[in-house]
Image (cartoon, rainbow, N blue to C red):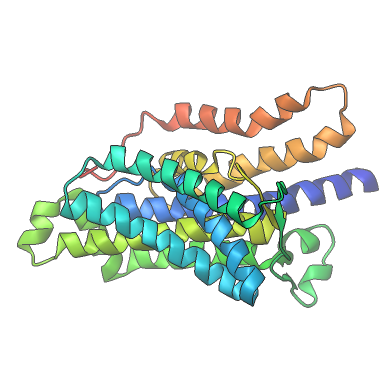
Length: 302
C-alpha cells in the first residue's frame, strides 16, 4: 500500500465517523421512541429544525448554546407529537409526516427571513476537534479515531450510554415493557402515557442534536435541504440494526462509509458520473434493509 493509499483511506474512514454521528443520534432517538411503542416519522423535519436552531444559537452565544438550542427545539417537536398521539389520539403516521413537512417548511421560511439578501447558506464555526494525547499520533488509526470532532465523540458516548441504559437498567426494562405489552405494564403500576411522553420528547431532542451534528460537526453551515433524507436513513438504520444500539451504530457506519467513499472518490474518478456516487450510500442502505426486513423483531405495540 502506497502512502497515497494510506492517506486516502484515512480520509475516507475519518469522514465515515463524522458522517455517522448525525445518523446515529437520530436513529437512537427513533429507537427510544419505538421502544416505547410509538413511531416518529418526523425525523427529517426535526433534524432540519435542529440544524437551523444550532446555527442561530451558535451565532448568538457560541456552539454550546447551539447544541442546547437544537436539543430544545427537537424536544418541542417531540412534545407536539406526544400530545397529538397520546392525548388527542391522532394517527401517529399522519402526525409524524406533518411534523416532518412543518419542520422543513417552517425552517426554510425562517431561513429566508434571516437571510433576505438571497444568501444560499449561513456559515458557522465547527465544534472543536479533540486530539487525544499520544493516541492521536498512532500510525494510521490515530487520526481516524483520536483526532475527531466533538460531535463524533458525542455519538460514541451516546452509544455507550444507550447500551448501558437500555440493556442494563430498570429504565430500559420499563421502556421495553411499555413497547411490548403496554396493558401488562399498566397492571404492574407503570404509567405508560408518561413513559411515552418522555420517550418522544427525549427522542425529539436527540433528533434535534442530530441536525446540530450536521451543521456544527460536519458542514459548518446551514442551507435548505441539508439533511438530504438522512432522517429516513435513520429510520431504516433502526430496522437494519434490529432495534439495538450497536446494530443502529453499525447501520449508521454502513451508510456513512459509502457516503464518505463517494465524496472522496468523486475527485479522483472524473469519468464516473457524480450522481452515481451520490446515490451509492442510499442504494447500499436500501439493500441492507431488504436483506434484514424479514427479521421482524420490532416492539409489539407499534
